[in-house]
Amino acid sequence: DVLSKQSLPTSTTPYVMKTAYLPDHHRKKILVTGGSGFVGSHLVDKLMMEGHEVIVVDNFFTGQKKNIAHWLHHPNFSLIVHDVTEPIQLEVDQIYHLACPASPPHYQYNPVKTIKTSVMGTLNMLGLAKRVHARILLSSTSEIYGDPEVSPQPESYWGHVNTIGPRACYDEGKRVAETMMYSYQKQNGLDIRVARIFNTFGPRMHPNDGRVVSNFIIEALQNKDMTIYGDGKQTRSFQYVSDLVDGLHALMNNDYTQPVNLGNPSEWTIAEFAEHVQALTKSSSQIIKLPKSTDDPQQRRPDIQTAKRELDWEPKVSVDEGLKKTIEYFAAVLREAGEIIPT
Ligand code: NAD
Ligand code: UDP
Ligand code: UDP
Image 1 (cartoon, protein in one colour):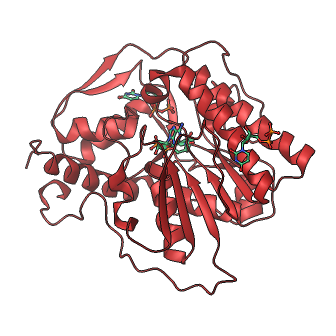
Image 2: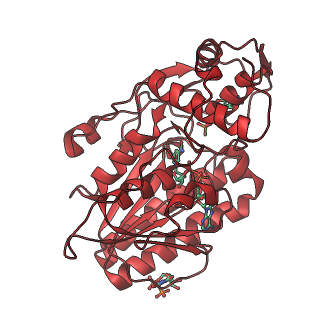
């Protein structure tokens, strides 16, 4: 029973902090914007373990210092507390540009700031990449497909987005960020990569970020009501974070420059998913229905043929395996916070 285990890994440091030795000519200087966030911090772990020099630029809007605390004193690691909407001059070989709030409550909290982060932040990173001739990868999103009329969604689908709804600050911000990437490629010959990331979960998701996986797990662990927004028939496809990190890394180090979907095609209705989390946690929570969110996409499932063909990538971790690790993580977080965990 995962809930009764007392010797869980600490919430932040499941890694052995041993980095590979890379000779100078193989060691890259890699900038990760948003590197203290959920996805960014796992990517930082991979790049550090490979022996690269890693610079994190983050303003800690949704990121947490504890996600990268285990690297703070490593000689290959630097942290710059900085907002990407302001210019910055650095000397780097590669840029993984992830800085942007990603969960609906976070990106809707200050929509103007979300747009500035996508537009001005991506512009600054492109200006930087241009100046130092760095390769730059944008973490775009399945949200650029909006409420899709085709399923699964291939990269060739242009999307169905409401330009003035509550999700627009994020969706349209990422769409224009993609447009800027290809404009700089065309006009200035920039070396670009674009990942379209589908719903991803795992340890280090912010407990309050309001995404469905963290909400359901935390509610279930505390035997509180599990909250479905709408009728629960909408679908999502869930990818474990280590698969995403492998995909981002494969894309960065590949020659393919068109957008690539990275996601796990395992598709669930939100109602099925709630019941599944309830069963895995052996929770006595009730599943309740709350009003539907405005413009909520009704279906989402990645077509990953491009990633398979071009990157030889596909997800390896099953949703259940990933959920078990994530449940253990949140159980540890709740225990550290002194919240009561059922036995
Ligand atoms: P997150 O909120 O955990 O991480 C975002 C990071 O960016 C945080 O550390 C935050 O502090 C930082 N940040 C935000 N605004 C910034 C600014 N103006 N300047 C500097 N730093 C700033 O979210 P995440 O899930 O790790 O998402 C990372 C990236 O992946 C985002 O670009 C997101 O759009 C994209 N993405 C994530 C998912 C997912 O399911 N997790 C899906 C699609 C796309
Ligand atoms: N920029 C940056 N760091 C750099 C180079 C550029 O932050 O090392 C910013 C720059 O301030 C500008 C943006 O990136 O706002 C776009 O730069 P670009 O050179 O493409 O445009 P320009 O400066 O000519 O408007
Ligand atoms: N959702 C839900 N209960 C929650 C959080 C989310 O039913 O507590 C629903 C939400 O309305 C959406 C789906 O779960 O239909 C995924 O939401 P999330 O915020 O995780 O991601 P996104 O909508 O950006 O894919």
